[in-house]
Length: 268
Image (cartoon, rainbow, N blue to C red):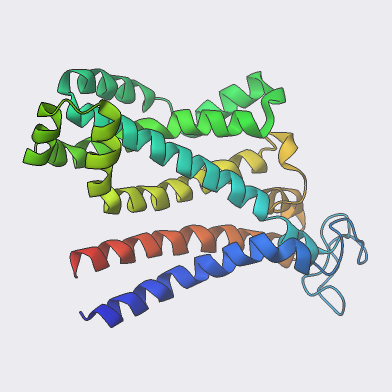
């Protein structure tokens, strides 16, 4: 496969995700009305001035769709970056120092026993006042163990290489070994894990928003739109299907982009 063909396939895979992200970011400025703007009765059919009709309170679905994505994306991206960063550092340390790594891996194994969704439910129901910050913290704690194991396995070959041994012989500090020697050689793993953790984070944030945990995420977001309008899906399907498709399209396209990148790096 030629380089141009590989790049074209990767671009086609990432384009849907880029479009959804763009809509979520600039959507509030493009919304024709405020999120509380009424367009008619409950579950008003799509028509002039309301391309996607109304929700359960008769509000403009299009405006809510345009305004309801940026919060979910921001939280998802924050969680993905933090999980990837912490996991990369822990995995690198585990590979560089096997004795310390055994403790890190045992702790990671224990952490993986608790499902992330259950952890969010337990934490957010116990401390609902923690808000979005609490959601980020528990998601990072629950998501880091598995990713750390992935990085430890990927870094094991790098840690056994000659240039690492030479750096250790020179007396280089741990921070130098991790950030200057190991992580630069794990660029593919870093990007792949960042994409996968973003998909998982979107799933967790959407689940929490659907359950209104925390309530500080607000009413105008895609997951809450699905929950609040599910009862009227037969009256105005767009009120439920539009935000559902936005979440699903983002997750699928990011997965496709990550897979395409992996194939391109391997030269398949």
